[in-house]
Length: 469
Image 1 (cartoon, rainbow, N blue to C red):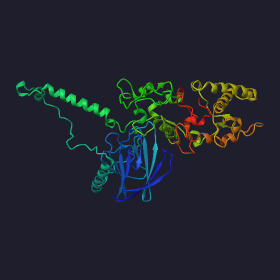
Image 2 (cartoon, rainbow, N blue to C red):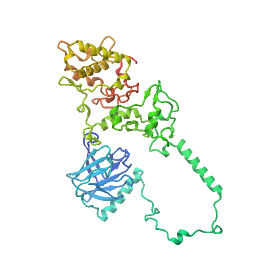
Image 3 (cartoon, helix red, strand yellow):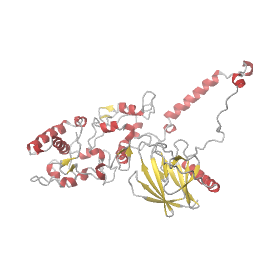
């Protein structure tokens, strides 16, 4: 096969376009694929695209999830010609194709909660464009080798029945052999068979965890003892499958039940509960022993909240327009403030600080403002004036904490411009803190402002505090 150019634009990840030169573009969930689509409904090696005779061909490998071309299902192990304007759906991902000279442009978008077959098909779907026989045979040879390299050999066995069972005739249905023609199976055969299966299953479940999972669980769930103090779970998981996967409850219910301890309570915000977002939506497991679910949850915020994505028909939108912005526009607070449930989870010092700031704002000439704006302003200042450490180079009080002069250069009249430039100094990935620098330096750490676990009691980032709680 000849080498071809593919221009990949990932609108779902909001990254710059890249150009790949390869003899075949592998599409799937495996990290070794050139186009990685990380979603449970996408197969490890889902589809392939390559060029032959000046045309690009789409090859579908998935037996379970399926692939559509312009709303029409592409048969498994089948190649079709790709033309300008074609749209391929794989799971919730949409691949928009266009020829760019000798290269093929692929624009990837994502629609949350949309699966193959649920998107609206065109009014008049284009007829199939199968590859010629000689090209189809060449594609078969080419992709068989790539599938072996990717470890995906799920082609049906030649011995697999391909026709449905024929209906039995009346004579055969009513015929029963007599005992003298039947050699009975010894009962011990069944006992030994059940014993062998039971021992094999126990060994596979306890010794080799990868037998039933794509990858081992994280080190935090593999430990036999709780290390965090105060404890964030009722018991150590000890690499047990049945701690999360049970017949009496879902994984979501088991997660929330186990993480109800002194140091953490698995609760989510009202907005996420209404949207059906739970523990496993952000904290994924079976990604390997080095995987850290708590760190990975930070990245899911930016992956989900993006202008190019929708959820149940609503556009999610990029937070703050893609920047860390001061939440005041034209003199009005756009910050919604913390709800009653979130405030109850804050330390008593923060709540007392809010009452004092709110009373001070009322006495200092804020009586003309709406009570809702006064309360939001008081809550915002209370969160920043209680034990918050001033970032390097910023003004602070004698204890190194944030004070009014940290953000405001003057108070008569009050300086409202400088605060707009100081937010990113602290909220830029939580360097050196609980989550280390898991985001780029110019991207915000969402949970440093937006608390997702109101009763978690571990929401304060230690790197931002001048004192221990």
